[in-house]
Image 1 (cartoon, rainbow, N blue to C red):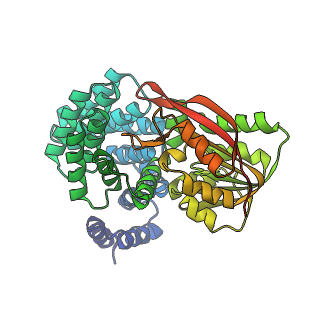
Image 2: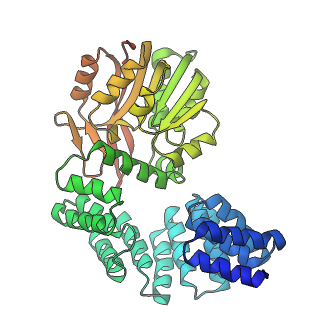
Image 3: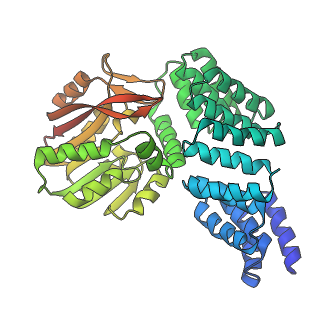
Length: 433
């Protein structure tokens, strides 16, 4: 079949979302003509659509080399860099696209979104968005982006208007109802928040974030299955930007503070035979724990987070799934457990403690963080995280035969311009049975 016919067939399948067959045809074209512009560009675009951003970058970069004057290649490559957590490189692509075609709205929108990710000046970001809006005033994604910017700077009412406009233009815009619901929930507009979450669930039965926060808005505790699905969804989507956002922007140091607590208790020459990093995420704790671990195991519910952790080569083993389920399947006993920002997604901790104690070597240690709650027991907050009263934590530890050997009040991270208050605990476990 001639290349032109192959390309037309590939595009037809691509547009019909038959990604696998379309990809085969694009690659067939490239095997004969490696520098075929459209095949490289479209295959890169296809990989971006299925969230394989490394492969998308490979083909879009090649397309940009073949035709450095294509503004749409630059825009798509810029969007891929954004998804890979490289806003600096994205800005270069969008700036180049804007130079090549000043009337290309996507270039202005992408530039503004990348500038916002880098916390650039409000007026500079808004200028990019306004240019996009002037060119295409009926694109809902632009209003959504402006809403995100306004909300970041505390202009909640105007942000809500922008989100509402985006929803009016496209009622099925992904996540728009959840965004509106979360802002209303945060602002105490509980009934309105519930309306948005119900609409999100009506549009998509698989919108686990909306279902999770609807339970909160309606005063219902989310079930364990929903909690796990929500956490998996959130962290899979957050994996690439996780460290840059949380550490660089929000002052998150909990893994390092827990490691400092461990060194203070045990001394710098301590070594543990078997260490379990619970909720290891992208491996922030693992990088520190590697130096004191003979065998280091990481467990997390997010496969995307584990992909990042795997690249750091600091774990002997990585396991994807629910912490309790994974631990219960192990024969190994651990002499150190670490859980940085894990209990805030679990709530009641009896099940976790049952499993940790059962898989603990004699005199093992458990170090973990919590967010502070001044009331009784545990509270599910409107931000979707759990906060734990320190008295409750101490009572649970005592009930399981554990000894709290260190308890420290700390600032965990910035949120909406204020520090989230928390506690760091170090506990001596009684050992398994």
